[in-house]
Structures are given as C-alpha cells and as structure tokens.
Amino acid sequence: MLASAILILVMGFFAGELARRLGAPPLIGMILIGIIMGNEFGNLISPEVLEAADDLRLVAVMIILMKAGLGLDRSKLAQQGTVALRLGFLPAAIEALVVAIASIFLFNFDFMTGLLLGCVVGAESPAVIVPGMLRLKSLGWGVAKGIPDAILTGSALSDVLLLLVFSLLLNFLSSGSTEALNLGFISLSSLQILPFQVILEIVLGLAAGFLAARLLVFVLVKQTWTRNVVQDIIIAASLGLFLVIFSNTFPYYSGYLAVMAMGFFLIEFDAPLARLIRNGFDVLWIVAEIVLFVLMGATIQLQVLGDVLLPGLLLLAIGLIIGRGLGWYLSTLGSNWNLQEKLFLLPGNMAKATVQAAIGALPLAAGIEGGEIILAIAALSILVTAPLGAWSTQVFAPKLLEKGEVDPTKVAVKGHPVFLAAVDPSPLSTSVLLKAADLARRSHGKIIVLYVDNVVDEPGRLHLQKQAHQLLADIRFEFLVLSGLVPETIMKTATSRGVTDVVIGKKSTDGKKVMVHSVSQAVLEMSTIPVITVLGN
Image 1: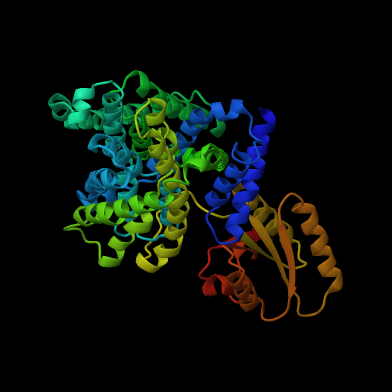
Image 2 (image 1 turned 180 degrees about the horizontal axis):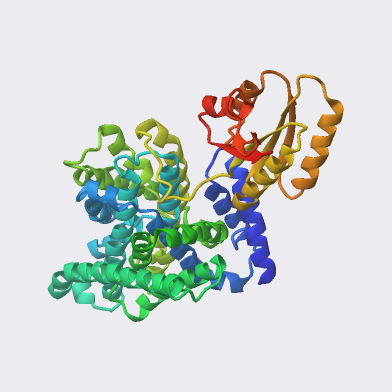
C-alpha cells in the first residue's frame, strides 16, 4: 500500500508537469497516468488503495471546496443578484432533463432511469471548476463582474440539487416498485417534498458552515489553542471533513455546501486567519489533486466504453449544447454580462469529473437495469469534459473576459517576490544585504545583487561577491555587475527583471539624511517600484 501511494504521488506529479510543459492542464497527465497504472493496463496500484479511493476522493473534494469558499467575494456575488442562484439550478436541471429524454431514444431507457443518468451527467466537477475559477481570480479575468464567483457558487448549488434528486431516484429504482417503475413516475409525495428537501439542505448547509467558521475563530484566534499555522490547518481540515462525513449520518444538510460556506464566512469573521488557512489549503491541494485525478483515471473501466462511445458522445453533446445552453441563457437574462462573457460559460462551466467518479457506479451496484451504461457514460463524461473544460478555460478566458484588478484578500498570492539589492564597496552594503536577506527569508523570495561598476574595481567586485555569498548563503540570489549611470542602471535592471522591491543604502551625516543629489534620492524619484532605503553613517 505504501509503495502504491509513493508511486501515485511521484508518477502523478511528473505526468502532470509533463502535461503542463506540453501546454495542457496537469490533470490530463494525471488521469492518463492513472489509466496506465490502473487495472486496465499496468495493475500497479494495490487493491487496498483502490478500495480507499472513495475516502481519498472525499478528502480531496473537501479541500477544493474549502479553497472555493475562501476565494468567494461577497460584494461581487451581491452585484450579480440572482445570476449565481440561477446558475446553481437551471443549467444542471435542464441538462438532466434533456439527457433523460435523449437517453430514451439512444439507449431505450425509461424516463426515470434516463433522469438518473441525467443527474450523473449534469453534475459539475468542483475538482476541475474550482481550481480553474480561482486561477482566473488570481489573474484578474472576469473579476470586475464577479463571473468566477458566480460560477463557483452556481457549481456548488447545482451539485446539491442533482445529488439529492439522484439519491431519491436511486432509492426509488432499486426499491423494487415495479408498478411505479412501469408507469415511469415518482410518487406524488416525493415530488411534493423535493423542493423542501433542497431548500432544507441549502439552509442547514449554510448554517453549519456559519457555525463552523465561528468555532474556528473562537478556537484558533480568541482561545489560541494552536501554536502555529500547521496546527491551524489541521483543525480547519478536520472540521471540514467532519462536516462532510456527518452529512451521511444527518442527511438533512449538504456537507459540501457547508464546507464551502465555512470558508466564505471565515473571510467575513477573520480575514487574517482566512488568509493563513487559504495558503495552507493551497499546499494540501498540491497533494490532493494528484491523488484525486490519478485514482480517477485508475478506476475508469475502459472496456465498457466501446459499445456506448458514439451514442455516448452524442448524448453528452445534446445535453451540453441544448440543455446547458438553454440553462445558461435563462440564468444570465437581465445580467450585465455581454455576449462574450455568456459564451465563456461553455468552457468555464462544462467540466464533469468528481461527482461522476463518486456516483457513476452506484446504479450498477444497486442492480438497476442499464447501470453498466450509466457507468460507461459517467466515465466518458470524465474523459471528454474534464480535460476539455480545464484546457478551454485557460485558453478562452483571455479572449472572452475582461481583465480587472486582482483582490489579494480573496486569492492566494502567486509566485515569489524578487528584491534588487543595490550595492557598492562601501560599508553600507552590508546593511543593504542584511535587509534584503531578511525580507527574502520572510517571503521565500529571491535577490538580485547589483553592483554598478564604472571604474572596473576588481578588488571591490570580489569583496562584494564574497560578502554576498556569506550573507545570502541560504537564499537564491544572482550577482550582477553592470556599467552606466547608476540610478538609470538600477531602474532599468529592476524593470526588466520583474523586481518587486528595490533595497538601497542612504548615507547620513551627523544624524541628518543627505537627500539632495544622492543615488538613493534619484532612484526614489524615478522608480515606479517600491524602494526600501537603509540608513547608514
């Protein structure tokens, strides 16, 4: 089991990176390597790991939903009015109905079995959609109108609806009620109570997330039970898992929605704590993403795809173009979205993976006629829409969405800062290097040490290089020697190398700063980049 876990992480990582370097989303490589390692080909994953796939998938989904909640923007959602709410119900519901009708003609299903298939196909994948939307938020695409936030919220709500309807249909079709099955309808009492169940799950899910966020703030901030960020993440992740698992015992609220709501309310209650937990869940997702998609690939049964490949592709196309197309149109009526932004819903909201992997095999296990076809369509929807949705989101966002200002309080900061330390052979350079080193260590940044040498001072250069190697031994740094006008050379280098902050020395005489005609003053006047000055004698 341990060997399989190591193999999943290592092979999944390199397969994902290879896909990324080829210009494709990493999950494509992870799914493909999972197929190769699974029972269909290599049989390299132990049965114990495959048996635990559902639990591991549950952990991964909890992590990504927590990330989604921590990335939501309340003001942008309020700006959209009912768009997010409509996106949560109309596209998924209409797609499920269209798929149900189409399956009657393509697979000779009765309407109830077709609707069961529609619930499987219509569900959206948080594991694909959430990372894609959070990436768009971190880059600024569509943030002015809150488009990623609306898609994130709608995706969570749609899964609540379809999972509830799926469970009702599954219980009905597997109950042996042949008379009702032949008539092709659910009992009137079930239909009457369905809207109340949906509302109850949503309301109680939001309430559970609210209380969980309050509990986190109380335990981690007010009572300070933890001593470091790692312990904060452990408590937050454990509470998130409890919310998901407890929904199996108390099936009157949505555990997935509760986790997402916990992250959302945490931003409102304590933004600094939310930022720390967001950064920690970003790290957890690096591992969870690999496990989720490799195991997803490993559990896909390719042999069942052959007979349903062409009608299955036709079914997915009908559901996507007709069902979701109509749902997206109705969802965005009266909104401030332009035509291009509405078209973005096609790549941004089409991906199916997590829910299909979790429930696709349940009809077959329950002995429902046509269960093997439902499983095959679920696998086909993963193979087609998950990679296509992830890829097209990255490609079409710059073409269809407007770029706005990124809100760093709602997304994790990507990349590492780069500091430029401007030095010369004077004693002040020691203080400049020490300050740059302190900043780089705190932020995991890099340093460019720049010496503008117009007199070819070889001893001075060697001294500075030796000093840099001593003081920056544990930091990635680059030593540059250039010539030219000192302030202009500093600013030209900072601009061309993407420097985030310039660190420079400033001399003082008798406790008074010498500002006029100094290099530091010239840099301050010229720079559009923040300049940190280190005072020396």
